[in-house]
Image (cartoon, rainbow, N blue to C red):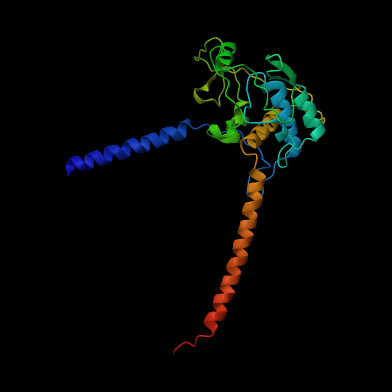
Amino acid sequence: MKNLFRISFFVIFILIFNINSNAADKVEYLKTEWSFKGPFGKFDRAALQRGYQVYNEVCSSCHSMKYLSYRNLVQRGGPEFSEAQAKAIAASFEVKDGPNADGEMFMRPGRLSDKFVMPYENEKAAQAANGGAYPPDMTVLVKARGGGVDYIYSLLQGYEDPPAGVTLDDGVYYNKFMYGNKIKMSNQLSDGLVEYSDGTDATVEQMAKDVTTFLMWTAEPHLETRHRMGFKAIVYLIILTVLVYFSMKKIWSRIETKV
């Protein structure tokens, strides 16, 4: 009995120690207001369009979005570029196609039906160009990382000089929000890096928020539809509950209670 008590005490002590350690190591992410949060949340169309611009001008040289097509830029609930704008975006990229009548592959301007152009031919080429590290596909990156949008938003702004006593290998950078604080991607954002077409001031904070909003949409393109369906379902259940209540009240009103 004493041995069982000691073992139980030891297990409880270890669990408490681990919980306290995890709480101490947890990093508090940067906070901001997200328009898509909550049961009635919607994407900010202007933020999505600016976010695509940041992805295209800053991120797309390394990170792919292989599950996205240019026609998705037009769809309802997304950036909602006009069809002419989306066609111009697609046509600005060269896409390998073929074979032609001579059996050869050829390059042509992109179309709305094309997937986003990949920055590298294959994974090995991507690793060779990035010192052995493979830049992850960004289509569902928000869902693949613990912390979601808050983590991505914070990571993009978390670059700092390493603390005293911390040494970094060549090609490795210090980021206070990265797991282990070491990251092979250099700081990609700086004030005024892009020139927003709508005149918004392109600060690091603004660009981080815009591109993170865009990444949230690519990971959940039907989020607004889901929210609308959820709202309709709640209204339906409320109406059904009221009808059932009054129906039961009417039925039980016919039954005389015995005193």
